[in-house]
Image (cartoon, rainbow, N blue to C red):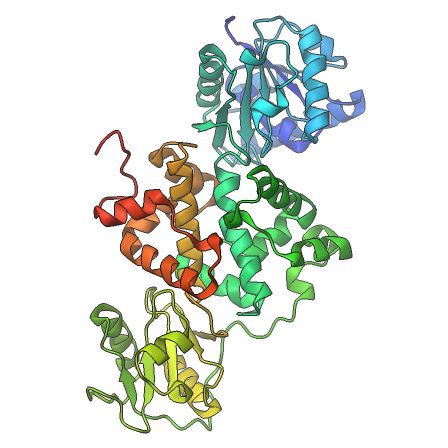
Length: 502
């Protein structure tokens, strides 16, 4: 394997320009080859402009910037990439396109040159199925914008040899990014786990549990996400995210955990792609207010709190006590009291019936997340309008409130459970190590913690209970519990526990 000082990049997009930028700043000589000389010149100009902007911000010295700009060169013909030690194919095409580009590169490159495919969801092994030397083909999944998204999934195909994989891992470290070793699989790691947020958001919308705006608001407040699923879908665009969702679903042989909803294809057909078309979930969906306001005419009854879970009951009591709410402290509620339950994975109808409470004057609150940031309330379909108004008014006196339709697991519980479960399944399938799963998702998706750490902090037993109760409601294998999660719950072990360390 030759020493890799010269990197070739084959691509037309700003992502190719971003890879050229970080590689040049790391001291590599870079040759960039686009479809046309004009596109290549445009992308090199963009990369140089971004480097100059870093100088103006005081992030890098001018002499380093000058050296980086001088080390980037156009390759008007891909045959000029012949002397490279590693070439990154970043044309971002479909399977046939990538295979065609790989075939072209193999014809002109030295047999020892490593070919890295910047693919986001198509397995490297399949892309390299017709390669003459599949052992030197590796996946390097960069995230856009490359200079800011400092994570790269390095994917070992089934025929990739150790030297090619190690060279790709080392190169990522040399450009100052974090390499994540990932097994070859549809969607790899980040895109796979990211499907949990998007497809479950679509499922919640399909059931009309809440508006897209309310779902996003609740998830930002409760889980600390930077963006909710519908903000993210509008940002990426349904033409891109929708295709990835459908492709990963089909590639996993229609795994129910990855199932999209019909709304996805309908919106794509209507051209409601998001920001790029000026119309997406936000401009086109019926919005409503994400927060509910107290009614000035609401009569405020005494509040009876279900004592079946002391921890959650105490959370609700402290929250409402700050608003000087009158409590009914009896063993059973008085005939006029508002009854409050705090279910895990159950809907209000199921929980109030199981507890023998009157569903017309009972509401459920998600007490698993900080109520001072946001309280999510719901009731059975027969909830009295007067008690619904009273509940909203009482909780509004203590903080922001959203009312949603009856749903097993509310919104935040349900979303957290499917994200953690998907990460557990990735660990079960050895797509990456538990530590790398957390690291990749935290860095690439911007979650406050990695999903396995989130599961540990929330409680694996709680996650298991939520999924079990949701499955009981729907009988949908989408919510079946990963063996990784079930075993560690049974053993009271961390979700980061590898079978090699127990």
